[in-house]
Image 1 (cartoon, one colour):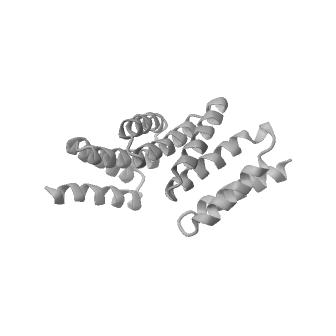
Image 2: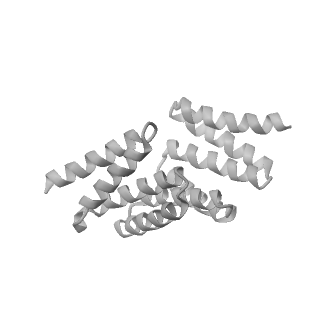
Amino acid sequence: MQDIEAKINLLIEESFASKTNNLDLSIELSNKALKLCIDKKHDALKAKALSQLSLYYMITGKYEESFNLGQKSIHLYEILNDEIGIAHGKYNIAGFYYRTNNFQLGVVNLIDALIIYKKNDDYYNISRCEKSLGTIYEYIGDEQKAIQSHKNAIKAAKKINDLNLESNAYNNLSGIYLKN
């Protein structure tokens, strides 16, 4: 039994580690992990694999698949009473909404996720949410909220010394300033 769990965990970890260099491999590994999650006791791992797949499909532009997997992960995380997992799912769902021009539902889901991340002092994901909120506010023309969200993203990234997150937020913020 523990061998299966260890294998599922390894597949999920390898999947996440591969996402920047080989997204196809990440999808393949997450799907393998998902197929091994047959027992109820693997529901937490199943939810994680579903959430990862949701993210990967969003990145590849397969929005419907991303949305469906995100919904399934949220449902499982709710059963497991896993707030951080729910937040991850809502973040993925928000990505689906704002990439399909449903900005209002994108904002709602991002704020839901952001509340959970703030409650848990998860500065990495606070920064990601704030950056995404800033992007949505830019799209809908609310420059002040966009600027504030990007500044919040920078602040959260600085708390954990994540230069990549900080740089991403500065790029968006500088774009707004350049337009003006």
